Length: 117
Image 1 (cartoon, rainbow, N blue to C red):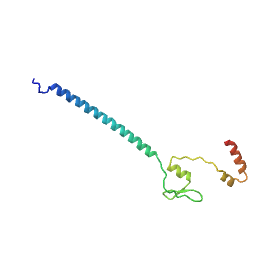
Image 2 (image 1 turned 90 degrees about the vertical axis):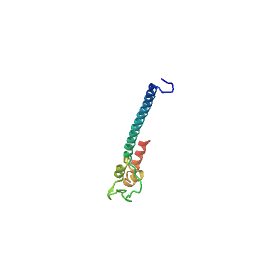
Image 3 (image 1 turned 30 degrees about the vertical axis):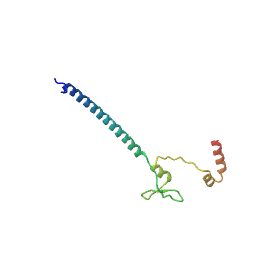
Image 4 (image 1 turned 135 degrees about the vertical axis):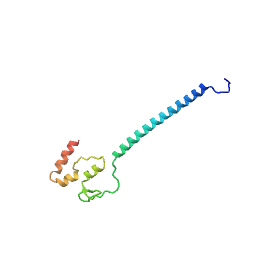
């Protein structure tokens, strides 16, 4: 066989190496695509769980109920709970204790003060 003619085995070997390289790159691309799809699904799931309050809330100046998009008035706690992940616990501030229980306010606030310290 003349020297300037390529060997058939060398060409087959070169083709095999190219095939392996392309196959490896394709497998890498497929794995990367799967990872990207998984991350996209995770982000979409996280985004669907995010609730955000923004803009103006029409609130009653007296009772503090909030008017929803359908025109119904709801307690602040109910409205915010249904539009966010916030949860509420209740208590009475010192000003309201004095207003609602004027005869007992000093005793209640002193007792409360003793419990905190």
